[in-house]
Image (cartoon, rainbow, N blue to C red; front, top):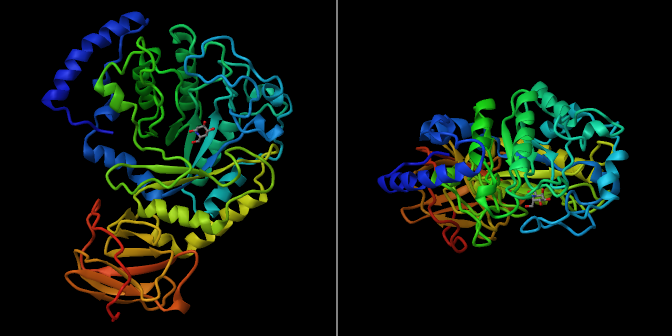
Length: 473
Ligand code: FHN
């Protein structure tokens, strides 16, 4: 993230600095001087460098796993009790004795972090994000700040440590998910929340101190609406001190926002912008095409985020098209797997992983390290580019072929990535392309155009027109 400080912003910042000081009086420690945290005021070049791997990676594995898998209950949300919606519910919590005691049965003796990372690599994934603590409050790592953690289970070994170390061994980017929302912790949102706020930041500090390099932090909402209940300045300053190159999603402060008159807003534009993180996180859907801001769609393969048995998985072709739609729209796909209680993946998930890996072996050159556009993506497919190559990913072919707005460059040649000819016409007003029926592929036909000059990053020039009417060359 980087912010251009204009006169207006500066004035606002000065005005709210007084508010910041006043607020800090309510809390033990003075506000952190975020001007001393380079990542928060990095320039465009520094930001581009920090985001490079993420933008090139395109495809990651999300993993929702915990003792809830023992009962096939949805992680966090599977607690039957008075689900403690965290907003304005500061009263006694009703916990679910069954859900909250699954940890006593949790013994994933078949958990093999190296096997997980190998499967992710086989599927063409370039990063992984593992749940370290979900809303249910259970810590999948050896935390000195709670007894409700993996060390209290029959398994008794640090899941997160094994995961991060396996990522390092296999050259896989390691991400950790952490839910600030905590429906188990007795101090959560109680009073000024200062006890819980310090506790959860202590856990994040454990995660970012004990396991070596963490490439990505994936937060998942806070509760309540009162920005004054949280010290995000302390959180981000600590994170970047421990992991200078790490990137952060947009949910560290998500759900903060006034819901009652006494709720305070962000004490400065700087804090508000900082907590927006480095990428947005459309969930359960393909993000809208956006080449100006980084984004990542998170979507589960199974019936829910965590394990719900051996059926009900999305098919490989749908998942391949999801990856293509994210890539051509300028974003990433974080595809979620929910391991069984024993630490293995269900067959339906392994099938998707292997099929996507096979597809990427053939077409990965048209995905990895590309940038979205220039044609607006849609139900037809989408486009992306890299150097002098422009790739058209086509889901559906009208019989007469495809017609697009004119390109800002000349096409030198065109063929499918399976080596078949692609016939095209180009004029100052249109570009058309056609591939013979027998040469089309499912779930995507990928056409590679060689152009006489690179397509500018961020350029969108409209998209598919009506069906092609011109005779293709
Ligand atoms: O409530 C969670 C949900 O369980 C899951 O972890 C997703 C993943 O993006 N995040 C929250 C819903 O937005």
